Length: 84
Image (cartoon, rainbow, N blue to C red; front, side, top):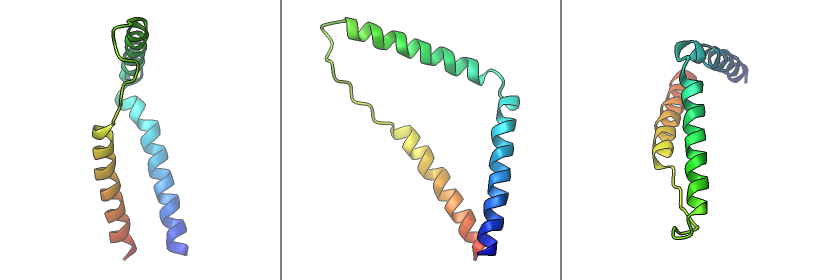
């Protein structure tokens, strides 16, 4: 139980540092993301106004799922390696 608490504290500190350092490493990321979201919203509005397009659009985030799967696999293996 003591190891779990120690690993949780270390993981929390590492994630906090990463979340605080990433904006400094990539300062234009937030502005670029905001521009992309605004462009996506404009496209969505334009698509809804076009009556010739179908109303239903299927979204399947396969890239995000693949990246998430790889990252989680690495994290689980690292935790397993340090725990045992």
